[in-house]
Image (cartoon, rainbow, N blue to C red):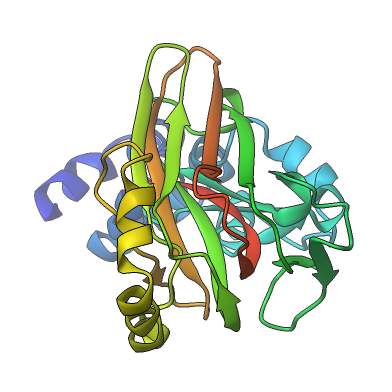
Length: 282
């Protein structure tokens, strides 16, 4: 890197900026450490505007809270922290290392079966969520959660994962009787799998229920497609997530459908808390 820095020092600053803009945010930061003489070029707007999303001005216009910045580099690092968009129903962020885009859609942005029926769902606020509302399931027999996203708002040529962000209340029932069916669908590919809606902390309670209803549960499982039987994993923000599937964001725009369904058991279920669905690079 030191030898490369010496060669770059011999070039005009605008040429150096153009070269660095073809690298990555991480490389641009490293070039400053390699040679202090490259600082002005490495921190120029020419470099950091290339690392920003192509539609960053549209993102700023949709931000709930105005962002203060004096340079494109400052803006880049401000967007590395999640910001709320579209009235607070979406969260947007970019990676520090490569600037790749991620979105988190709130529960209000999802299609949830009978979510507007107070008998089945309750909408409430919690300080543990970045959104003003989360959805908590009271009781329902057919559970369906869906979301759609167009790849044109994501980073091109990037592999993405879709994750349902949830919690399981202490009063939960019927969620773990049989696996839920999960899928991610693009125009030319559908990725199917299964997942269990259970909290590992309450697993002993759930195992006790399995002892009483084992025969019925085994019968119900036969109705569901085979899969990995994924379980929720802890996140760093106090929530849990289930990976619904993966897809590749091409240069061309296409619609991606993400889904979790448990409609074959027909048993009553409740206690599922939904924050949203996150789409992020993997």
